[in-house]
Length: 429
Image 1 (cartoon, rainbow, N blue to C red):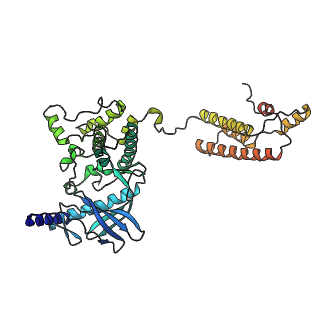
Image 2 (image 1 turned 90 degrees about the vertical axis):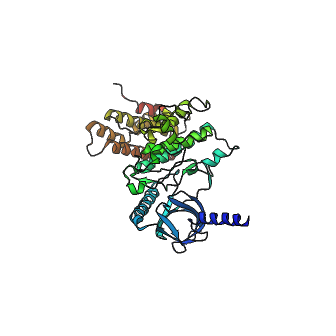
Image 3 (image 1 turned 30 degrees about the vertical axis):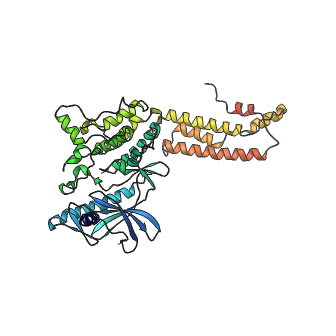
């Protein structure tokens, strides 16, 4: 019995030998490893301490176990024939870290530093205090409302859209790689499987396959498979399929085999099974999880437009014709006048006709109105439409301030609102 126990301890020690020991220093003494968090086959993730800033961080170590092994603290290739492949992976890891660091997004984990040590590369990331979606799924006491699920998906899609705009693929989207921070906002983490220009990656890099049954699309299961943004969207759809149904979807290779044999798809669609969810919302998830890439949703932006209500879509600003611009500025003038007038006391004041006539003569149009009329009638080739609009708005604001100041100085000499109305009345055609 003692022998069996010792064997188990030895096996556990050997299994953990790939990770750096607790307390290991990196980059001199700037970082100290606290403990390993996960090992994804392409890299090892640690909880660590930034000793200079006195804060906890997450450190990802480039460790493609297919090609390398741990010798002391150093990471060395298993054979000299892998040296070039290993170096290619390290360089790719560094480029990806730089690319991720440039993506400033509230739903993407922040990368603060990259460096080389122990013959490999490391990236330093934010430590997100929270729990992942997998923990939420497995917690029977935890429930997320359909409205909250939709909100989380929209935020993650916006983050994924930014990743794809930077010509990257995440390649490892799954419930355990989406964290909910302490405010409940999702954060996409673990870009260790990302590939820059993934559809054109080399055979050497393709050899490092990272798949998760139930979430990875079928093209992730073989080297050289053509990958695209729809590949990440399949994994994202599978993640939310699991969150909504409580069951992970079938392996995509199993689905592909049934499809090739013209048998029913073992993955039962969400649409029609969960009435508490919007039907279109569920249909988009089913569509993102289609077996054939060409039948899936092709971009995160397309998915967002499908599930967002029409009134909530962000529409681009389009400048229209000069006539429309003139109407816009005219409305701006009118609204400014109304604002000034409405901000003054409207006590009824009875004045002699002569005094009212003098007040009317004293109320002169602002100088910028004449300037506007000249510019719109003669055409100003020196300014664009946008510049003219900005200039007029600025002049209106300045005139508004001047008028308010003048009014405050002349509290005892007020005139009826009707005088302003008659003065600014638009002439009859």
